[in-house]
Amino acid sequence: MKVNVQSVNFNADRKLVDFIQRRLDKLENYYDKIIYADVYLKVQNTSGKENKITEILLSVPGGDVMVKKTCKKFEECVDECVASLQRQLIKRKEKLSAHV
Image 1 (cartoon, rainbow, N blue to C red):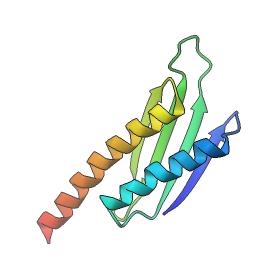
Image 2 (cartoon, rainbow, N blue to C red):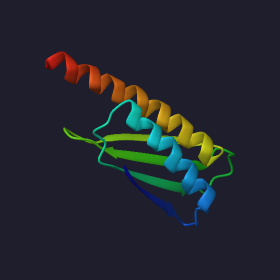
Image 3 (spheres, one colour):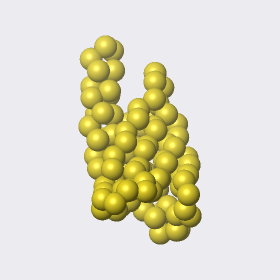
């Protein structure tokens, strides 16, 4: 799966990009028809600690799947997004297998 990481107003380091790639690669265990993933990393200018925003858009046949989370760290956001995407992909796969 091709993963495009875009960081807005800052440069994401290589370790973070590799971490995102590893986490998203695990989604292929649950749904093997994923075409690509777009990951948007943003830092919000607020006084609160939870100012890291991660959006993940998965392109799959039959419509895209989008998840957006706000956390203290990007790694935490990515983990939450992947968990949410995992649930959505499992549901989608169950629906498809029920129609066949």
